[in-house]
Image (cartoon, rainbow, N blue to C red; front, side):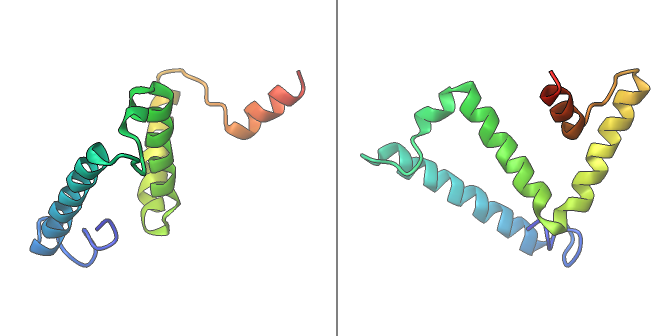
Length: 105
């Protein structure tokens, strides 16, 4: 959907809208099946934990960013956030610098 949307087809085209609707329906059916299963693949009670939920969201974002078709848009968004932080006087510390500082303590 993210590969075709805006490139092959318009975001409001029948193909993209149908793919989006199909994805939402599949997600709803998955959740309903998991709620009824004696031994679910993904116990939904795990999402009550804030740590699990944040990690799941971050995993989704990282996976989305690693897709070559999405990486340019993701890099642009991160760049804009960094620019806004710098404009507000906040400092940026990359993971590399933070790891280096932590290893020298």
